Image 1 (cartoon, protein in one colour):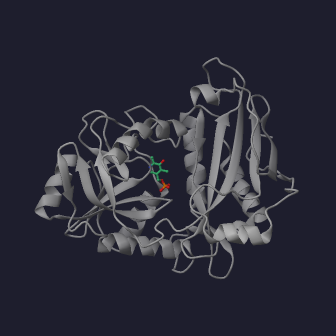
Image 2: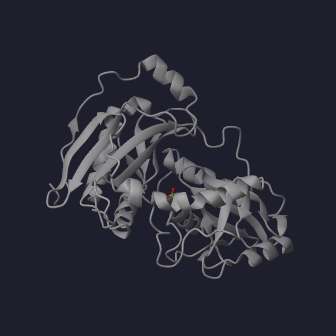
Image 3: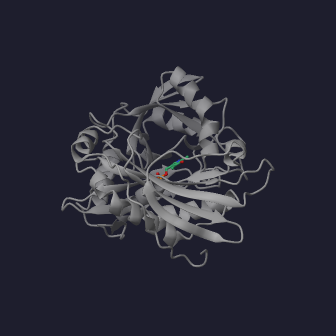
Length: 365
Ligand SMILES: *Cc1c(COP(=O)(O)O)cnc(C)c1O
């Protein structure tokens, strides 16, 4: 069944789910990305057949032929989003249709079969329904959802695959900043770039992350938490971090963020920050920002705050900036007021604690 997109999910319950007491112990301190729920979604696609065999099945290992295409040519895409426990005990998603649309765009860029956006959304709901007890209730904890798709055809020829497997796995995660929001130190790489014009920078694909790891290791070796990538053509303008977009806050209250040129991943959080800030009367400008300007504006004091944003940490203040020419701080290096205010406004909407004027929150349960 390919068509416009309604698939029935066959539910195969896990015969040995994690016992309630053990699950509660895991949920008390889940960390990030190491604990998984009892079930996962799988849907298959084959050329000439379309999408078929939609299932909720026990979470477990996959068996891969060594010649499976993804292992060789990395035809793979993913998404990252969170399901939140609401104060009344329900479960909600934040802008899931934005992730569905981005997943479709990533599939197109990677020449993969497009999953109908409605099937993507239905798959999240179906998994949350069976694994609802895994959505943590504690403040700032959530159930991280990882939809992904890979080329499952067994073939070493280089071409778009004729078979794909789509999955969704879910992982309870704790508060990103367990002991209060702490600014990160960033390393501005002049050895490595992340994405060039015409490349895959705007697609959420595993290959972009593989390409960023050497730069990340370089950042860590300089005592930094994250890497900032400059544009690949001029090696001058700020693109983004390895997995987060970046914003600059000026002394007149204006927000500036690099424009989406095709090399930057269009973050859902980025878009939400722009919308929310404008809603509150702030000016938000999307334009190129050079590293030189960043340094000069930090020195003159015009630049008051810099933050990174993405699903995992929502908003993260950037305190210290290091590069091969030395280091500087933005203002006093602490979390800025605008950053912290936007951060809590966004979290309050996500949690159903604040009014949602944009219709971003979707109740699942
Ligand atoms: C996922 C991702 C982001 C953040 O996107 P969100 O939708 O806000 O989570 C930013 N940059 C890169 C490279 C990413 O992969």
